[in-house]
Image 1 (cartoon, rainbow, N blue to C red):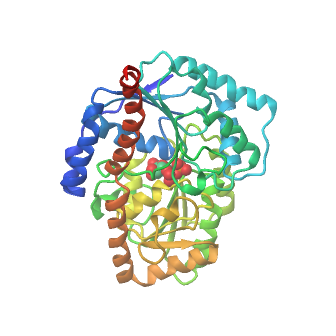
Image 2: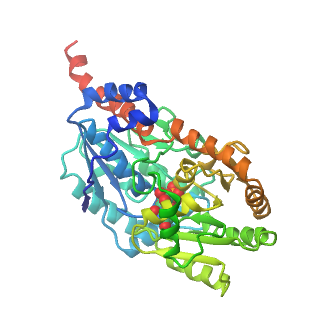
Image 3: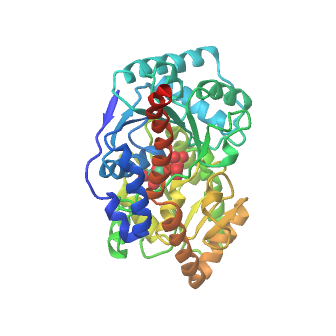
Length: 421
Ligand code: UDP
């Protein structure tokens, strides 16, 4: 099992005063006080790529600054296992597929191995993220455990929902990003809704000046002085990269100098990436104005540069657990044009800080609107940043988790008192 070390101290609780004011900071410190020294284990399935790995460093740094010990572990797994878990991911997002007995055994076996290893780490509370390690519960020590889902399961394929439901039922709390993701057959007393958040102090999200952004982008052979339409995402059909290309081709008719960038880093736990990438490259052919950039290593500075400099950011997802790429772009003052689905709806108020779109045509229309109306775009962009400042910064996420930890650990501490009564 890999243990990921989180370095650096920027993003401590005090650093947030200048962004959110002293009240929230005080509330968080107060919530954390009785939890000082508590040992929390976070378990997920990749150290790089995707939204979960993205959130952990800022989350951990903030908790560390509050005196809470957090250990981030990554479950082991080979290609075969991650092929099964990507299938589970797709099934939970509604794909019409099925799991074989052999695939179920691969899943169970890997969770058993992981669970047994996990039991060797001292913990006061476990936080298990997403379906890949959901099956470790039977191997955990007798401490509170919560399961956190980052997937849009609102239209889950019943077979896959059943598969996951059986495994998550025993957890003490089940966290989803949106109410509609928590299906009705779960124990509603265990369900908690928490929106994800971004770390404003990270390389990806701190302010970048235009000149630095231009230089970074020019390295990719892209003209930083012509308008850019950009989507940043894993190469995954749910992110609808084909739809983005179609919308771009419509928008380009009246904006011939518009360039398209699809930037995607490969996630260790997503084996579909290379196949999708190959088919996209084929679809684009030798169209020089479309740039498909597939990074194989972390590219935070590049993501920041594209989100800062692009004329329009799109996130045309067909399903979306939350869409941190949307949050990141809103934070940079970009009114994002995004799919009217899942967690994106918690972030974008249509026409106020971005646009929600249902079709390729609508997407193209909104892109063109922003290209044609820079003043309105700036105003929407101001609202966009303010939305994130108020609702989607890491300190708010930490506050929500501290409340949960207090509930769960408090319950344990209260037991002896109740017994003496
Ligand atoms: N990301 C990145 N480089 C890329 C593509 C994506 O760092 O080339 C990051 C992106 O900035 C975001 C995360 O990966 O922080 C994706 O999270 P999101 O919630 O948008 O989608 P997920 O991949 O979890 O479905």
